[in-house]
Image (cartoon, rainbow, N blue to C red):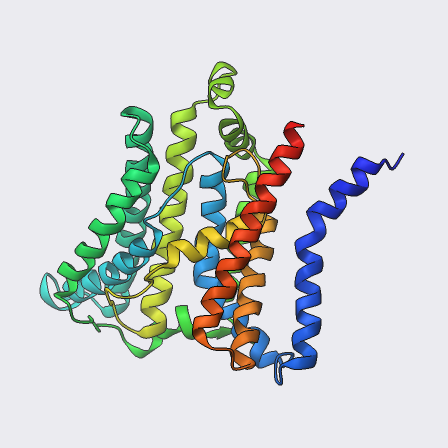
Length: 326
C-alpha cells in the first residue's frame, strides 16, 4: 500500500535530482554549447577531483565528524608526490622514472591514509574534536607543502604522467573514471557491508553503537583515514593535471567538498546521508558553475549564488531533522 508518508519520502529523496534535471533543461536553452559532449565531459572532469573527496567526506559526516584539512591534504600530496619522484629518480637513488613515480604515489597514499587515522586517534583516544585536529592539520599541511617545495613548483614528471589527471580512456576523461570507480566502491561499502551499517550506527548514536558491540574508535579512524586517502589520490590527480607539485593548489576545497555533501542531503548532525546524494550534489554544483560561466556571470556572483544554495541546503537539512523528531 502506498501511503502519504511513503510518497513524501520518495519526493524528498528525489527533489535534488529533479532540480538538477530542470537546471540542465534551462541551461540547454539559455547557454550556448552546454549540451555538447565536449562541455559535459569537461564538467565531469572538473568535478572529479573534488568529487572523490566528497564521497569520503560523506562517510565522515555521517559518522558525526568533520574534516577541514582535505584542501591542504590535496596540495601536500601533490607536492609530496613530486618531491619523492625527484628524490627517487635523481637525488637519493637513480631509479627509472616510472618506478620512482610509482613509489612516490604509494608513499603519498600511505601517508595520506595515516594522517586521517591520526585525526581519528586524537578524537577517540583524547577526545579532541575532529574540527580542531583537522583545523590544525589544514594549517600544518599547507606549511609542509611550502617547505617541501621551498615556495616553488616542483616539476620532475615526464609527459606521460599527465594521463592520470588529463588523459582520456575510451573517450572519457581518466579522472572521471576514477571518480565513478570511487563512487561505485563507496556506494557498495556504505549500503551493502557491515562496516557501512556501523558508520550509520556510530553517527546516529555512538554510545548505543558501542553497547551493541561496534568498535566506535575503529570506525571513526577508518572513515577519516579513507577520506584522507582520497584527498591524497586527488592530490596525485592534480599534480598530474598541472604536471607539478604546487603548494597553492586546492585552496578552499574543503568548503566546496562539504557544500556538495550537504547539498546531497547528508545531515551535519550525523547518522543520515547517501553516497548517491553526494554524487548528485557534486554534479549539481559542477553543472551550476559551468552554466554560469557559459552565461558570463561574474565570478563574484557565482560565489554569492553558491553561498545562497549552501545556506538553503542547510536550512532544508535542519527542517527535515525537526520533522523526523516531530
